Image (cartoon, rainbow, N blue to C red; front, side):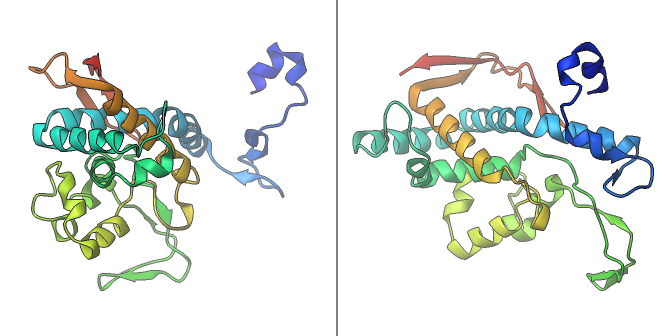
Length: 244
């Protein structure tokens, strides 16, 4: 921001959140060091810009790589279209929520390939806590990996490593428990404030992609490159779209 102000005089009096960041003591300042600032900058720039893309790539890929899933999703969308349950030209968010198998595909993608892969660290409060009969002193930094949590066989089943949307439709109590362990938007008081808007985006875009196009991989012999950084990243994801 300082560089921008030196280039653009009209920005001289423009305030932003980074003006309150300081590594010195003083009232009204956020006490962050250089590494903290770098981490916050990554979150600010990547969460909104990359989150939806980080969902859509595995969402599409997992579906087209599983013909049975693709056929069931295609049948549900076609049936909803034939029954007049989808608005045009774009389905409403509320309408996407009523498509049970589609929503199962959304939740399974969030579980199997969560867009946010960061471990979201927290500091233990001053009094400390007991976890699984182990005392963790106050001030200890702790974290949990979404990748590991979402593959817990005690929660998601013995096939937790597999992409299988049907697991979300088998039992209501099991579904509620799986959702309780879902870390796709963080957890607790610091859960992503953009969660509801993110669901609106991914559900409307995800539905319209399969409503409007027949999709297949342009390079079926070679999957795309997938790296789990703070946000899931993808390269060389080549697809062919045929308008329906």
